[in-house]
Length: 225
Length: 241
Image 1 (cartoon, each protein chain N blue to C red):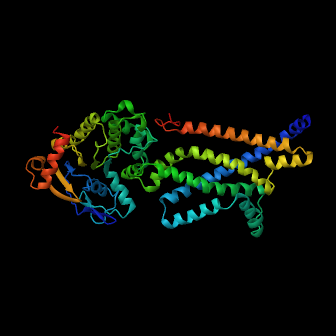
Image 2: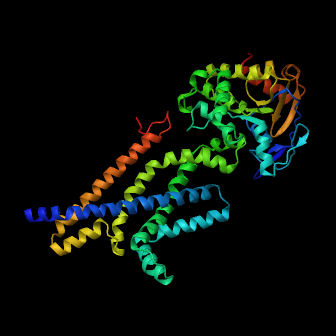
Image 3: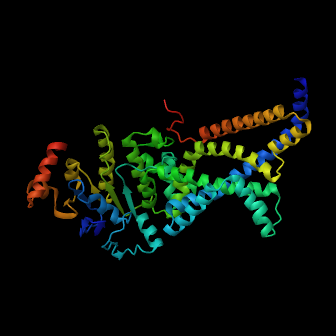
């Protein structure tokens, strides 16, 4: 028993440094997903039918292929074939970001579609161009409505980041595995890794809940009764 | 103007001529095309056939710039208010001036305050649409439209979604606008109000204008049997006021 505690204690600083790597991967992927997801959503709702079809294919591709397959495809497949010299860390963020953009685009699309048609009509009636109406009236509301769904995306990305261990990214799981195989303390170490993930999930979701409250439109409540 | 949705002809060649300071009121049953006609006038709905002239100049709405410039001159009030939910009353009134006319925020803000005070909402400027009553929301939307200095105001059943008690406050604002010479085209069921204010009543049914004339003519000596029938029914329900 005390052996496992010592093992955990010794490994903890090392694991916690790994959680920094994990967080950077997650934040980077969420950011990339957001930056790409918004234009994708706008294109799917308001765009030309041809554009909508292209976006639908993109979404299908990144939602339809398992993360592990995509990671290997990009890192060992594309990077080698095209002779691109990117670190596993960079590829992890890019691939997770592209996948996230596909999922986030659907969150935003749902939020945009949930807005009453009258919002756009009133914006047009004032003389706003479609682009102006979308950026000033539609998106500010749709993005606020998307925060709960985004919280979902955060916890999924956090868990998916563990898969990047397969590329050799030095995140939590990779480090836990490294120590576990050397000290034979598998149970305590993987358990600790799990706990770290739980804590990160809890902190992140709490933070997003605060964000939800902060951007709430006055007059609307964020809970039911 | 003519408009077809699929197989259904919603508007069949309805024509209007409006002079400065006129208050033309569209009445008629649901589905008559009143709302469609109003929305065709500012091209929120693209008419299949029809042309529009403002101040003797034809509006070439195919060009986006012309369309946006034209829409700034035509204010619209909707039945369900359509206030921007993420902005408070002041910001709602201000946003058109800032984002469309390119005015400075401070200057636009002063004008917005003035317009809100004019409709009697000086104390509610920081409130958000979800915190306002229906009558207050509609008054904000009128302030928002007026802040753009429109030449014409289109009102699409402005009080149809309001509690009877709240209709009066909106009617007062509209009456004021009329007295100050605003040119307006309004669709409404409130014929008591309509008759006291209108320069012309236009009765529509089934996408066509069946009859038009002064309030006295339409309500008391209508030529068309359908007009007489409709007016007697609506007087029964909404009463004379």
